[in-house]
Every structure is written in structure tokens, then in C-alpha cells.
Length: 231
Ligand code: BT5
Image (cartoon, rainbow, N blue to C red; front, side):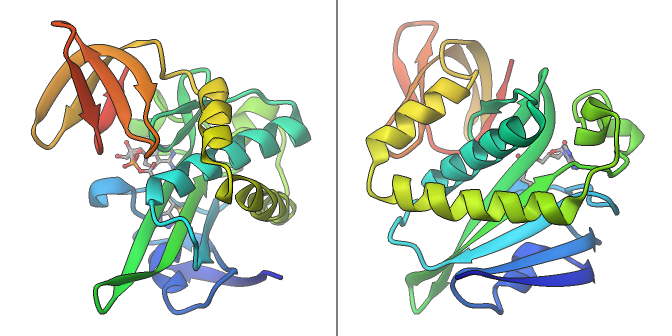
């Protein structure tokens, strides 16, 4: 069974979660130092769902867990509210092209061994988004036009998470098939920014390890392990 720990205010639920064991969940009403990938700032004001799940997983690839989590959020929101979202590689859930949710999966190492995975989920629910994000981000409240119960929603997401996790843990090919069905990245003309440069091409596929396989303009294949995709 899982156990949920609620806090009024934390710097980041992903950091607090490091203190807890397997299947613990940390939720904060507000994060003062919420972060995204590459240490980017994650806007986390009151009304949103800021949550981290602690796992001691068999799966050692954080991206696979991110894929599972994005599917879980997509499915839960669709089932409860009938809101249809799409997944963008590697970690976004989008509504009409705007970011509704971001996932940050971090592996924690001890003596050079990965011993924990922290899965951070940032979902805009009733929270107000800052002006500079309004063009590219959206909240559930803006879509549904009512205030939602974040606690109920978090319970649904957590239950769905453990159900889907169990299923996909043993079946990576199923994960990739389901992810591709819900994603709108594969097949698109994209621009990808990585630490070693900017690439243009078609998002051809995702490989076994959830990397993005890009077909460049000169037809060469480029594997993207980490980066930002634009379209
Ligand atoms: C992510 O990073 O999308 C991962 C976000 C994970 C947040 C959760 S909240 C619970 C847990 N605790 C944490 O401290 N973090 C996790 P990335 O793909 O790097 O996207 C970051 C970018 O999204 C920023 O640079 C902004 O452009 C944009 N952004 C920031 N806040 C946002 C928000 N509330 N909604 C939508 N977009 C946002």
C-alpha cells in the first residue's frame, strides 16, 4: 500500500520525497523552489497538484517511468473529466498544444548504485499561471471552468499510477505502443535543442529506451537522449 504525506509548503516535493521510503507520496500545497528538467523553474502556486512518488523500481531507466506517468495523467484526466490530452516527448501532457502537466523523474544514487526513483508530477489544476506562461501553459480549471478537488484527483492519479506501473513494468513494448498512441510527437516536423546543438527533422520514432529517434533533413538518424522538442 502507498502512504501520502501532505505539506502546506515545501521547496520541492522531489527533494522532500528523498527522505521517504518506497511507495510514499509527498504532496505540497505550494512549492517555493519547484523545478523542471535542467533545474528550470516550475511555477507552483496554491491550487495546483505538486506531488512526488517514491519508488524502488525494477525499471532503471527514468524515462520509462516518465512515459508511464504521462500516460497515467493522460488517462486519469480523460476518464474523470473527458478532457483529451496529448503527450509530448519526453515529459509533457498538453491540451490543445498548451502544457497542462510536466513530469520530472529523478534517480537517486547511493554508493554508485541507483536505489530510489522520485517521480515528480506537476499538474495545473486551480492554480493561476503567471503572465509569462499563459501562452504556452493551461490549467484544468481553465478547460473545465470549475474549481476541482485536488485531493480527490491526486488519489485517482496515485491509484492509476500503481496499476499502470505494475502492468508496464513487465511489458516495455506495450508501454511504447500505448505511449505512441497518446503522443503527438512522432511523425511531426520538429526542432530539437540538446546540449550539443539544434537539430531539425522528423520525429521518426521512440526506441526501446524511450529516446527520440530523429530523421534529419539529410536522412541521417539522430538519437536524442535528452533535450527539448519544439513544434
Ligand atoms: C517539467 O520540466 O515539465 C517537469 C516539471 C515537474 C514539476 C513537478 S511539481 C512536483 C515535483 N517537484 C518539483 O520540484 N518538480 C516536480 P521541463 O520540461 O523542464 O519544463 C519546464 C518549463 O515549463 C519551464 O521552463 C517553463 O517554461 C514551463 N513551466 C513552468 N511552470 C509551469 C507550469 N506550472 N505549467 C506549465 N508550464 C510551466
